[in-house]
Image 1 (spheres, rainbow, N blue to C red):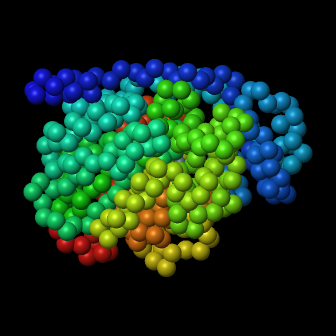
Image 2 (spheres, helix red, strand yellow):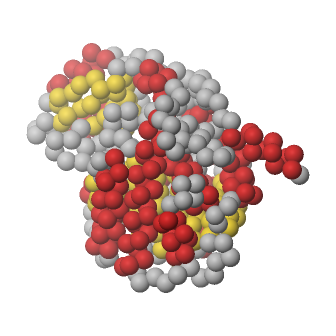
Image 3 (cartoon, helix red, strand yellow):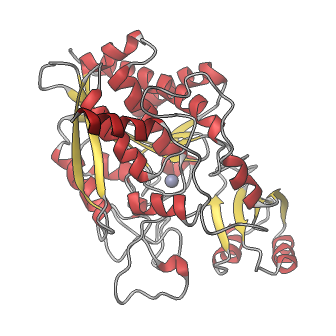
Length: 436
Ligand SMILES: [Zn+2]
């Protein structure tokens, strides 16, 4: 037994650099497109979406803001630029060669502070098997809390969707819980990395942070680092910019490679509507699926959230990028009746976050700070399961590296997010008059 344990610990403590994914992105460019006052956004979006060589990474939030769109080198670039100019937009080529950025992302980090604990390095992105192995180790060896390993169910490709429940050592039952997930969108690697860092803080308290015991006094914690394990692993090994899950169903057209998969964050069964920020086209990056909950990953997470709905007081889903702390609703411009509570807690959290490394986050409802998108997890958590403080958080950055955030930014991002989380927990304790 000891030998097995030692081998396991050894395996997760020495993590070499990831092998590069098979698909390369030489010559892929990211355009930053600034619509003018007279630009017809519908026309502009048409220009993007009628062309499956264009992938919209970000849509503008206000009049001076931009679209970020990735353009495949096969596209007639002069024609594309001409179309943009005809529509009265300004643009610049923001990322000239995506492959360079991807190679840069994997360079080992020089950041030494807080980069590693006993069992995992936090200055590196990890494969799904490594993440699972680490979670097993945490469940066996946690020094600071009781840790239980659980499975929400299986993904389309039959991977286990594994979560940890972390509670106070010998603590009493009946506490409120905070549920945190990441990695529903495969390419947003910083999200699982941040969840792993949070697991480490709660389970081991490696830096003797006095707030950790307070957080375990008041809350039980559920942590699901990767909602979409098939897509995440595919992004690690094969196609860095993969977003959806990896489902295929007979009858769905397979005209292009990207027709595999559903955008899981458009697939949840609360006011599900593919025409609101999703898509009925299987090849689209935001394909909402055949029907609400057509996908095993969203069904598994949805079931768990509602089964524990009376216990969970806050649901936080980490994404990237954009630095936004958003609350429901995503399906309508209307706000929840208690939105001032959600706004206040998020404002406190992001203010604390800013004090760490001066990162600015925007707080608001998803529809108002981003765009309408029905079928998201936070709408479901709040609307269907009655979880009051439901948030979607777009982590770093604001588009400089976009999804390809270098490994050396993992620890600072996790560090500031951890501070935000502690403030969020503290604000909820005070607002809801919670007892230990
Ligand atoms: Zn996302």
